[in-house]
Length: 102
Image (tube, rainbow, N blue to C red; front, top):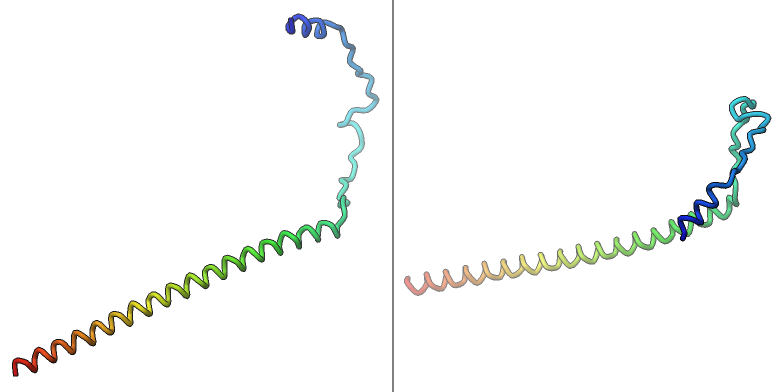
């Protein structure tokens, strides 16, 4: 049913208006419109809002990196302290063992 209905609309003779006085290529060239549209203050306001939002995000990631670096430094410090205490106890054991055999 839809096919026949579309055929009816297509078969109608539609005349095309070709009585244009000047074509686009024949008309004189016009200067390009370079004037800005819209409110400049509004554009500046939206830019400042987006940059402020990005600034907060940057600060949050910076804090996260700082905290991670501090935690890593504390862990390394504890690791080195544990290693130093192991070395001290090992030296004490070897000295006491040497004293036993003297």
